[in-house]
Amino acid sequence: MRKIVQYETKWSLLYQMEKEALLNTLKDFSVDIEHIGSTSVPGLAGSPIVDILIGVKREEDINEVRAILKNKSHVYVVEKEMFVLLKEGVSAAHYPPIMTAKNARKLIPHDARRSHVYVTVSESPYWNERINFREQLRSSERARKKYEGMKYELSKRLWNDISTYEYKKEEFIQRSL
Image (cartoon, rainbow, N blue to C red; front, side):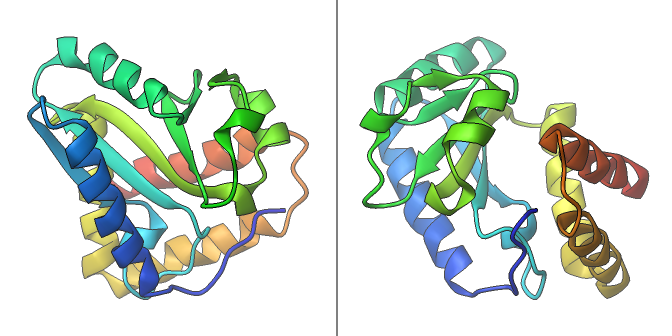
């Protein structure tokens, strides 16, 4: 079961703090950083984990940026190409620095996660899909309610494989664009 909570204004503040820290960490790169996912849409209920999208200007910078983030004690989930940033008081020393998605789901409880960080090329199809979907949710109450209803419905199910939950969300996003 996934935990879905009502929108909290602190999510945008948490994003701003994360963004500043990431900009400082990646000061040698030209990056765009955006708040995506449910926590980026005022009024939308969601999982209380801030999703952040880092866009690099050049594809060849992706691996360097990922290497820097790995050295910052962020847990990297290989299949998801995402970093899990842990909440204050949760030590990264308890987790391997690189994990499979299956192990991350089992070993890092959602209530220990502060943020998920994704790295891609700015203006790539992935970048544009995420930004366009966020903007659609921000501008359309109908789209927001439909997405929120789907998330609540999916959150009630017991998933043997959480990737099915994630697939259903992604399917919704693709249909919406």
